[in-house]
Image: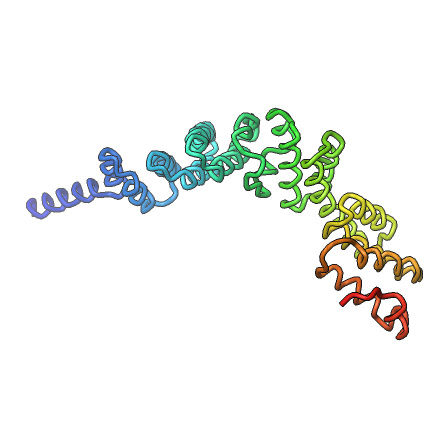
Length: 296
C-alpha cells in the first residue's frame, strides 16, 4: 500500500512539473518565445498567464499579438492596468523602431481602453498622416490627442479621414473645415473631397428623413466643396430629386444638366442624371431630345 502511495505521489509531482505553465517557463528560459506562448495559451486567459504571453509575444517580435494580449490583460484584471499600459508603450516603441504602423495604432487604441488618461499625443506623432486610421484609433486619439501631437494640418486631415471612416461625419466635417480655412493647396483640395463625402452623407440622410431644409444645406455644401468630384456631383443629383419632389421641374432639370455637362469622364453619376432626364414620367416622352445633350 505504501508503495502504491509513493508511486502516486511521484506521478503527481511529475505531473506538476509538466504543466503547460511550467513547460512555458522552461521554453522562456531557453528563449523559445513561440513555444512559451503556445504553452501558456493552453492554461486559458488567466491574468497572470496573459501577462506572460504578452511578454513572450513582445520578445518574439509578435507585436500585434503582444498589443492584443496587453489590452486583454488590462480588461481582465483592473489591478494590472498599469502593467498593461506600460507593456503597450513598450510594444509601441519597438513597433516605431521597426516601422510597424499597424502595431503602433493598435497600442494607441489599447491604451485608450485600459488607461483612458494616458497621454496619447507623443505616440500619435509616430504615425504618418496616411496611416490606417481605423475607427477605434480615431476615437482613441480624438481632438485632445491631436492637439498634443501638434495639431498641424496633416493631423487635421488624418483625423477627418478617421472620423469619416468611423461614420462620425459631424466630427469629420469640423476637422476638415478647419483644415480648409487654414490651408490653401493640395492638402485643402484633398480635404475638400473628404469633406464633400461627409456632407453628402449627412445631406442624403436628412433627405431620407424628410428634412428638406437641412438636406438642401448639406447637399449644397457638398456640391460647393467638391464641384467636379463624385460627391459633389452626386449631391447635385440628390438636389435635383429634392426639387422634383417639390414640383420644381425646371430646377431639377437644371441641376441634372449640370451633372451631365461637368468636364469629367462619364461615370455612374452621369448615368444617374441621364436616366432622370430621360424618364418619361418626369419630363414626358418628348424630353429625350429636348433636354438631354447629345452624349452617347
